[in-house]
Image (cartoon, rainbow, N blue to C red; front, side):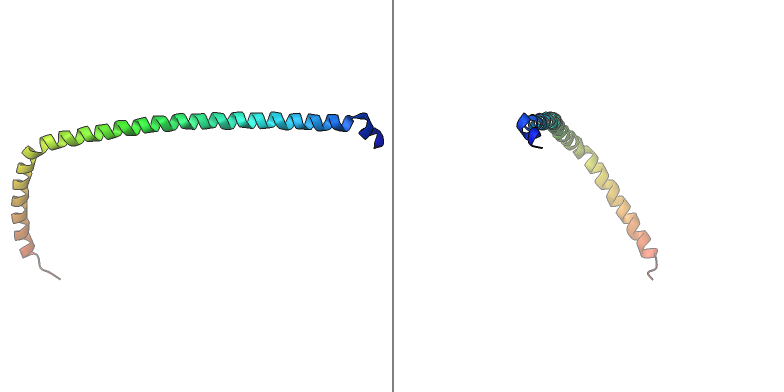
Length: 96
């Protein structure tokens, strides 16, 4: 054991272990950094998609509001007629 310590083999072994740990650490850092950059790109794309969807929703609301008054009057008349017919039918149904 004394010869092992004196010959410098132990210091060489610790140097190799340190280099292996360094290489493993660099490889892990590479993959973590790569995953992080991909995630950031995906987040940017999702935010852009969300912005476009908000614009589309705003346009759809404007279109619906522009077309709504014509349909609304017709729908109200139909609803009033339906309510009158429904009221008559309800009066005929016996309650339990």
